[in-house]
Length: 199
Image (tube, rainbow, N blue to C red; front, side, top):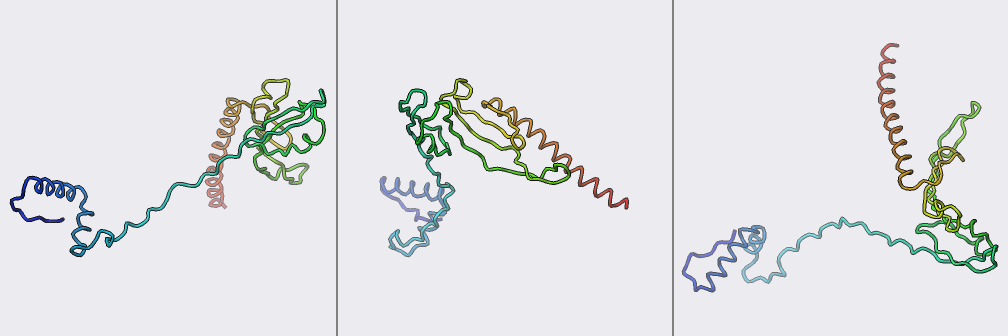
């Protein structure tokens, strides 16, 4: 802590002294740094504060949805489409040849997960819980014209056209089943340990 001589000071100097003492009391580390520097040394010679690590992760800006044109096989006229955000379809075949509008769709697909499933006593890898985010902008059904999710429960067996509430129901059902699996996992560990002691 910096000390100052207790002498009579003019009003302005006394006020500055009071401010210095207040700052020293509130920021003792700064006061110590100032007290420890060589007399008359410029502030630039004070040790620099270490650089603080950045906790902000860089975020990639999402790509703007693509806009493209195809020829309608119904009218032979060009039709312009803007993909849903995140669409992974190339649409190259739609662009190259006349296409029926109802055959146009956008899709983003989650990475496949497989498990070995016994089929006629042979283990075979099957996709489970496949997820696609889709939209069919020219479909006759309004539910298809809005973004929706299809969940592939097991290889080509789907729960389709889920809106946010429907998908939440699926998530809740699966979460309950995962909780049950975790409970069974703990039970399996206990039962195996007890079974070994019996042997």
